[in-house]
Image 1 (cartoon, rainbow, N blue to C red):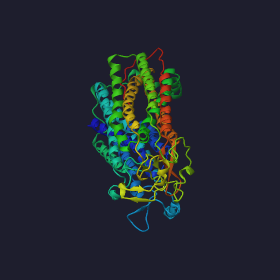
Image 2: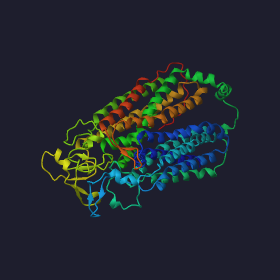
Image 3: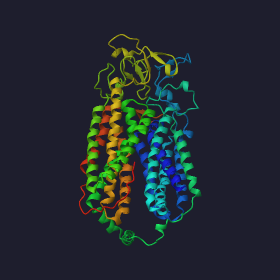
Image 4: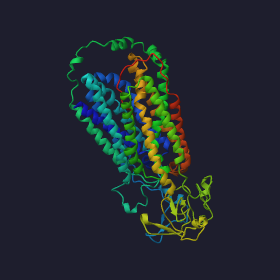
Length: 603
C-alpha cells in the first residue's frame, strides 16, 4: 500500500512539474513578462526545495513519515491551486489589437484611425499595476517546499521496512512511475493550450486569433486545477498508513554494520570529511561536469517547446504534444538502455567512464547538426524586411512608419499582424495601409492595403487576412528532420546517464557515499536548477525583434524573435556545455571502490 501511494505521489509531482514547463509561453503572454522572469518563476521551485531540505531530511525522519509526506502533498496541491488563482482575479484577457469600430456602423471595421490609438486608450489604463505573476512565483515556491519530504522520507521508509532483496526493485518501480508523469504533464499542457484562456466566458466567434498566433493564450489555469486535484488525492492514502511496519527478519539485528559504524564515528568531523571528499579529483571533476550538463539539460527542457513554436511556427499545443510523446520517452528509454548495457557487458568503472564519454561526445557532434536545420526569419515589413520587400533591415520603431501608411495615425507599439497576398506580414492592418474591411471574426479581410502595392511586382487586389503569413515550405520540410535528430540526440546523451551515475557512487569511499550524493544533489540544484532557466531566458530575450507593451505601460512579452539568432544562441549554449561535458569526463584512477549500487534514473 505504501509503495502504491508513494508511486502515485511521484506521478503527481512529476505531472505538475512538467505541466509547469509546458505553460512557459502561456504565462509569458498572459502576464506580459519576458523570458528571464519566467526563468525566475521556474527556478523558484528549487529555491523552495532547498529552503527546507536539510530540516525535513533530518528532523522529520524521526516523526510519522507517511503523515509528513501527506502534509507535503497537501502543500504542493495548495501551491498548484495558488498558481491558477490569478486567472480568477485578473479579469478577462484582452487581445492586443489596433482594430477600431467604425463610428457609422457596428459591423464594419476601421483599420485606419483618425487619431492616435494611444490617446484613445489613455483612459483605460489602470492607475496601479498589480503583478499577478507574484502568485505564480509564490505558488511554485510552495510546490518546492511541499515536494521536499516525498523523496527522502519515502525512499527511507521503503529501505527501512522492505526486505533487502526487494528494496531496490520497489525503488525502481517508484522511479519508473515518476518518468510517466512528465509524459502526461506535457499531454495535459497540449490539451489545455488548444482551449482559449477565457473559454465559457466569451463568445468564441468574436475571437480573431488562432492557437498559432503569438497572442494566443490557452487555458493554462485549467491544467493547474487538474494537477492540484491529482496532487491532493495523492495525499489521502498516507493519512491511513502506520508510522512503522513490521521489521524484516534480516533487519532485526540493531547492531550497525562496519560501514555504518565508520560513518557514525567520523560524522562529527564534518569539515575534514568534506575536505577528503572534495580532494578526490574524480569526484570533483565529475561534480563540475554534471553541473554544466544539468545547466544544459534544464535550459533545454524549459525552453525547447518555446523554440519549436518560434522557430518552426508550431502552436504551443503541438510543441507540448511532441515533447510528451517523443522527447521524454526517448530520454527514459536511453537511461534504461544505459543500465541494460552496464549489466549485460559488466562494465567496470573505466568502461563506464569511456561509455559516458563516448555518448556525450557523440551527442555533442549530433547537436552541431541543428545549426543546419534552421529557418529564415519570417518576412515582416518594417522589422525583418523593408516595405519594398528587401531584406537586411535593422529594426527600429521608426522603420514601421512608411509613406504608404503615413496618412493613418498608426501606433507602432501594437502587434496585430495581417498577412498580405504578397507573402509579407504587416504588424497591423493600419501599418499595412488598409482602408476598409469585409467579413467578421476570423474571416475578416482587409482591402485597399496601400503598402502591399510597394512590394508587389504584379498588380493584385491589395488585400490582407488576419494573422502572420505561414512559414515557407522549405521550413516545413526541415521540421521532421529536426524532430528525428532531436529524438536521436536525446536518446544517445541519455545512454550515458546511468553509467555516469555509477561512476559517481563507485569513485568514492563507501563511508562517504551518502555525503557525496547529498553534495551532488545540492550543487546541481543550486548551480543548475535555479540559474539555468534564468540565463537561458535572458539569452532568448536578446533575440527579440519586437516587444509588446502592457496596457498599463511598460514593456511586455516578446511578439516576434529573430529566429536565426534564436537558433544560434540556443544551440551554441547547449553545444558548448555538451562540449565541456564530453572533453571533461573524468579519468578514474585506482584504487576504485567497486561498491555495487543501483543507479536511479534522474530527469
